[in-house]
Length: 616
Image (cartoon, rainbow, N blue to C red):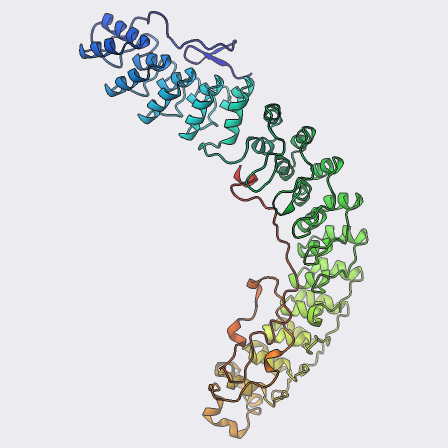
């Protein structure tokens, strides 16, 4: 069934002509509510004719302002139908019921909307008329205005809360009848407005989102630009790509849409389709000439997008079609890095099958295995190692994947790496071993496991620092206890002849010493010489104390391999300067020199809340 036009009070009609609702030359005999029947008939005739003087005269004589004929039509209905705005005002002023309905449920605003009298519609709304009132058959004022192609009335009603989703008893909406009648401008207005009448996206974008090829065809025939853009520069083809609507996409391309149109950040429709895994849309775009290695402002290709989102079928299509498997973003991330970061094993396997370099590096010399270690992705790390990834590859400042896994306390990855012969004694540029890193960040399980594997607990950095000293510095009590239980040398001295206990006491970390179990007191006490028993010697060094040793503030290594600021595992206060001239541990001492080991993909082609699919 198709939506039908209205005759009389909304009765379906097989024709497209709209007759006047109960507006016979002579109104039917009125139902006398008050006054004489003849006066009531004269009153309705005067209202239809717009005879304000006669209407007021009869009202003065006592005629009921709400008197109606046999079908329920009253003076306000007649005046609204004929466009007598001043008479409408006077009737309302004399207490005419604004929402009085005929027997078929039509009110004055239905009738004014059907006739296209925008001023009267406004007067009625200003006086409380219900814009979403439905007749017995479910017709709304908006439906009637849309049916008769009254664009101004449609706009007004939408701007005043008309709900275009309300349908007739047969399920037809204002949009359906506008499409049937080929009222293209009304269709555009309806598409551009949501239920509250707020303009959001261009009409063609809405049609693309809804996969409405019929509406899109009408709009394109009405001289709509197929590349019309939203505020951020996205075209309808971007929207179709986002939702995987290949029929709309094909229609747009047939009408001249630019397959390589770049929106904000140089995002193409192919980037969008690849990111969301729209296989058929990817095929359509490639067949119509989409640039397969198109770059965003961050130098991301569609292959990066598909890999990062885990769409292995799209990855396969792109690679087979010739996408650059080693393309790099501005941070040096290859598609394999992206797949590993997302723990997408199938994508990583596909890329490796097509000969993606397993040890490809970023600008910070981070391999995919470094990324897997950082993220704790055991399955994809195992795949990389089985495909001969180097477990001892050196990233920024000489950190290996094992260093990275220790820093992030990824015990499962640590175990995996050791099974593939990762070097437990590998050192960074300043001599930090994985055990140093684990001790500093408080990774108790990792420290315990490394010690069980026979790692030297007293190994020193270039500056003579042991894991125990770093644990004291970072206030890692549990690690301290584990190290002591495993026979670590508590009195080990660094180059500046400071034992861990000396450093801890000078930093004021008395609570750390107190937290060590009593059973270990003998070991701890052996590190404190008799002359150090003085209370004054275990306090924070004053501002006039020993100056910072040369080079103290420039330690060249770090265990801060965090990807983002919130990933920091060590608080600044834990490694801060005690005082301006004290023995200092600068904020960049152990954690800042490595910097960021993984540059995460910035999903810069997300649509904003009011400019893209999220707005629809």
